[in-house]
Image 1: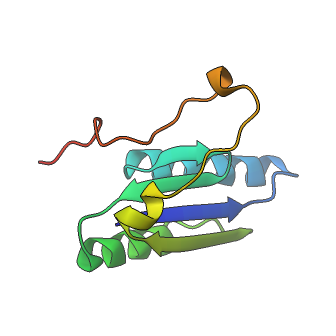
Image 2: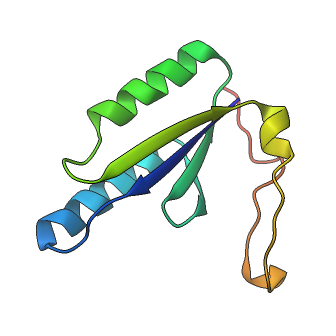
Length: 102
C-alpha cells in the first residue's frame, strides 16, 4: 500500500520557511518520493508500517499548517492517471524498479 501525504504550510516568515524545509527533508529522509509540490508518497508493506509512518509524521509535523495522509492500496495507486501538457518536462514514478527491500 502507499501513504500519500498532502501538506499546505505557510512560508511567510523565516521561521515558517525553516519549518517547511525541515519537514520536507524529514519526508525525503523517511523514504517519501515527491509526486508534485507538497504531495509525497511512500510505499509501505503492511498496516503496522503504515501506522508507524503516520506516528513519525505526527512527531515531525510543523507547528503551523495542514498535513493530510491518505492510505491507498497498490492497485488503487496503479490506476492513477497522469494528465499533463508537456510530458517530457515531468518525471513519473510509476514502476517498482526503484523499490529496495532490505
